[in-house]
Length: 470
Image 1 (cartoon, one colour):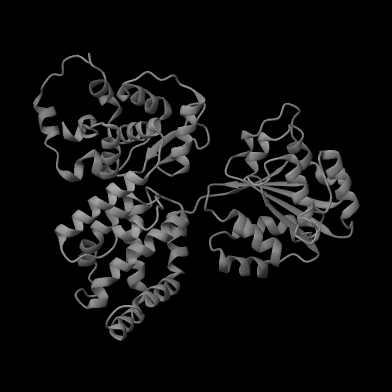
Image 2 (spheres, one colour):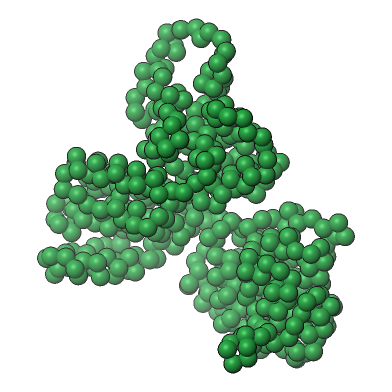
């Protein structure tokens, strides 16, 4: 057991507890559990660990990995499971036909018993399992009891981002083993990213091969100690960890910023151990990357982080790139207003909503304390401190306040909020997956320049409704 855990942990650090649980379920030689529900936030390694463990560390076990988004009907789901478990691949030679036709659950169970060998073990992994809730009412209960029905040593693993309590069937569901994969902590992310220093350095070396003074730069790069990268990661995560905890996104943005961070060291203008000067050099780059961390739109990040020679030309290029990004973003009309409302909710105090969005809000008494409070420095402005969380009710209240026309609250409007969350323009601060009941709290991830250009596209002055500019 420990040898298997160590081998997988070398590839997926900080996940020893999850690997041990999987080994207890599938690696001891006992009959497999009927169903296991593996859930947790995105980018926590759920599917990757499952693939590594089931595909390379279990003998005499056939595995079928499928995505519930692709298998959007019962027939496609059943036939895909049969094809994967029997190693059948639809091709031109067989007329792209499945190994057997399964139009209903009865046919599916019959083909399982007929086509599969009783002496072997089988595991079916269904990703995005929450989509099964949209299928017929008997699909989910039957998947949880599939070994009992077909009489095979078969286990169904459901992988999802939602807790199992979100699944509701009137007839009830069989007991299922739940395995929660927690988010990576700051310490975990630091340890994982530190292990990738050699890979990052090799990628930068390849990029430097097309530049002048190759030998000198590469020699300096290869002599950089690990402490140099450790200092950079501590600096990077102090800025980005509060806004983003997605490991993939952090690795992507970290690599882009690290190239800019290394430039003065490779040129010899700044010493590798001069952390203060390096921070001053990378501060503006990180600030720009922070406003576009989830926006993978072509080469936007590369354009933002591209080195320029003059400060004025750099600022002009940043503004032009942000305008291009906002202009190319094809959002519906109401979604743009929802995004503006989310930004206002994230960067204004809730107590100021009445004064900002109501016509008859009453008179405001001028006191010395309030006058002094308005004399804000840049570091204390709400737009500089970062986004605050807000509720769905407050988001919709601001949306209706800033929108000139009357729009009813319908499913299309709520679907556009889900679209903004899917695009990572909004992220969950708490209550993930509970938009309908109003208990969720969200944060807006876009920056001031970006939302200003979105406002210009719909003819809305964002600055007029921000407390920082009163």
